[in-house]
Image (cartoon, rainbow, N blue to C red; front, top):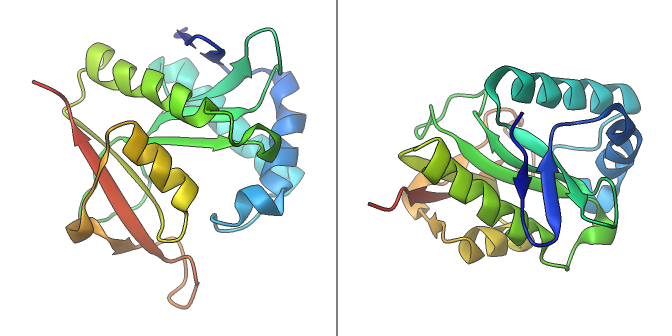
Length: 179
């Protein structure tokens, strides 16, 4: 099972003990403000199970993040394949979601840099993408800090959100593997 380590973090497979803090994260309106909405405990647990199963099957995915000698679970970071169709799919997305208490410490950037290195150096992916709502400036800043470049021609309306949903317009960032 792949575990990624940084100076402060472990990106590791999911544990049963991650489910309660993950449910709290997914119910926090500060965390879900730029998402389609909060999740119930059952929805959050099912999501965690899907993430764990993907890692077990493929050896990579959206890993649980642990702060070494600190918090046993603060969120996730990793790679996924979007399940919707858009002009830029199929693709592999780099993404993250952290509990509000752990925002502003550089953890998302640190984790994302480790994931980016894994994507290019281990999986040899030709490109990774990331996307978010237009107003999610915090995630957009992480995307830029790890080297992704905004692709204004890639902006899209997220197909999983209704036509009148305020978060439907999304921006796309891309990064090709260095040659």
